[in-house]
Amino acid sequence: MALLRLSTGHVYTTLEDISKRIGSVRIGKFDYPESFRSAVARLQVPLTDEGITLLTNNLDVNAVALPKKEGLTFRRLGCIIPPTNTNPQFVFSFGKTQDDSKPTQMSEEQLAAYAAPHCVLANDWHFTMRGGIIKGLQLENAMQGVLYVQPGEWIRLNPKVINWPIFPVGEPSIGVSFFDKDWGTFGQEAHPEVTVRPEMRY
Image (cartoon, rainbow, N blue to C red; front, side, top):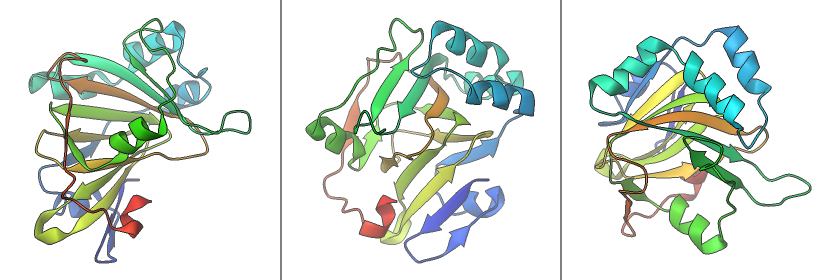
């Protein structure tokens, strides 16, 4: 169930209520049968080619049609593995195949830049398959929010959305993402003028 928590202290739990309050960000649901969901929960992480094939071959065809209809055709698989007893850092893996999805540990400087307020200079559409996608958002009238998107739900962003990621701990997070530009051809625009309120970091 998606959830929006605002800096006003208000919390919203329905797609309709959330959608009214997140500006140009869009969210929705897609068909995610329990059998598929269970198979994804058992996938080895970082993702292998077998896991990537399972995800790409079984994602709801109606869901896939949504970004393609809007010109988002580049597909990428993302996996974020939270810290463990044996590895105290987050591990990131992004790509189309196992070969180009080599696990990466960001330096403290890289992680700080990634987690700072920014706009991604592309249109992007993310389908949450495991764990969660959590985005801090700069909204109108100096208001901020944190949007939690669960498995079976999607989030659609654009280059004007100032946001900052919040990485869940516990189980890994896996998403299938679509972009209107090839990966590596776009970056992100930093917004250092935006100060994230402490309660909007979680």
